[in-house]
Length: 79
Image (cartoon, rainbow, N blue to C red; front, side):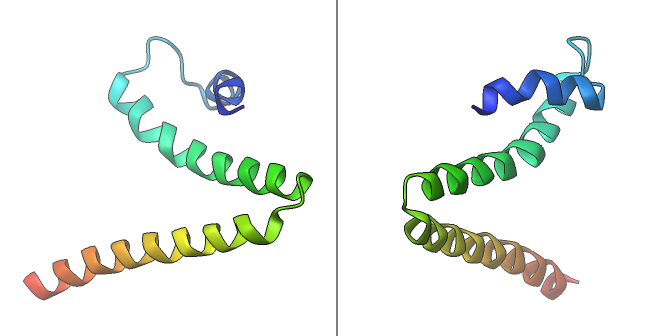
């Protein structure tokens, strides 16, 4: 499903085959990780498993925030 969305979205934001690879590498996760999460919740809801997937989403969100906080705290302590 995400691969179906990639071409139209890249076209809308102006990503072409001539765009540098490092730009594509930076943009891809910024757009498609949230897209994946959205479709995961959508299909989980359609299949009657919303609460299961919502708990997984919350746990993953907390894990990501914890990692980000630890990175910023380490940088603050070094300064």
